Image 1 (cartoon, rainbow, N blue to C red):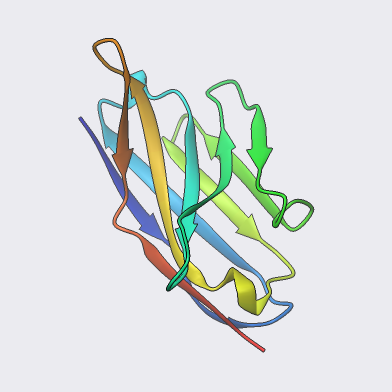
Image 2: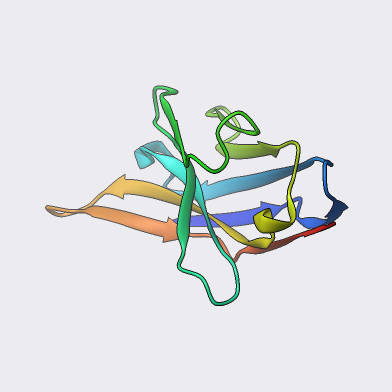
Length: 119
């Protein structure tokens, strides 16, 4: 089992920056990929960014060039640096961690943190 605790959400004006953190505890040695999803009211959940255990990254087109995902394996923490924020980035951001399960990947989730960008 993996527990994830997020921090760093809040309110910011358009053009500003926020940094989200997600700290993992429990069976952290089994964690492979980690990343972030977001969901705005009335919209589908969107994969924002993902980072492999080796550091390979992938981003949604909507955040490329503005967001940076990173991880500190020694601290079992994944970060999402969000720059040049736009009102359309407003959403609940949730981190996840994937671990190998019995024949399938087991995904664990954080509780979510609100990001609000005002124009």
